[in-house]
Length: 228
Image (cartoon, rainbow, N blue to C red; front, top):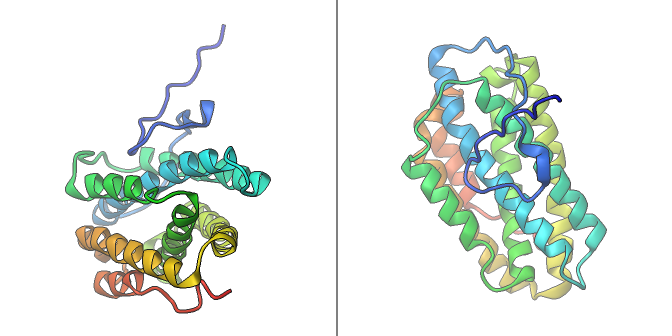
């Protein structure tokens, strides 16, 4: 009998997707010590959001009258992202999983579900749009991640998928709630996410990303996000 591979430890939340947490083979990375440590801090913050999103979309896909197939597909993609980020984490130095930033991230993602599925979708659209912004900065030409082909491929895939998730989430949210209310909750979610970004400022520096600029841009909700 072949032994099952060991389960990768959760970043923040246990998976709802069965066996997707198996440990993947570590990547062979050529990062400097400071860069590797910076990425090791950021990956669990990103992974915390992917774990929370997979669970959230699983729950919403089972609750009518939302678009079951689209939400179930997003949940499955979030679980793939979770596996990819755990593979990256396994390739980096170990970090303190009790950090203030990771605890703040967990509390933040729990808070996104307040008020029902429509508001949850609105908040997810807002923070996924911010996540796209963050990843775009991390993989832009000249950064350490851009120079590592395997890392660039992983983060580019997550960016591509999350951009589609934004479109689905915002469309469903707009269909059920007033745009003004979605803008308010989306703006509040972005400001809270920016506060977490601020806790990881040194890590962004190590990855050639201006932490003040990324925090400022994450905090600002674009006017057109919830345009009907």
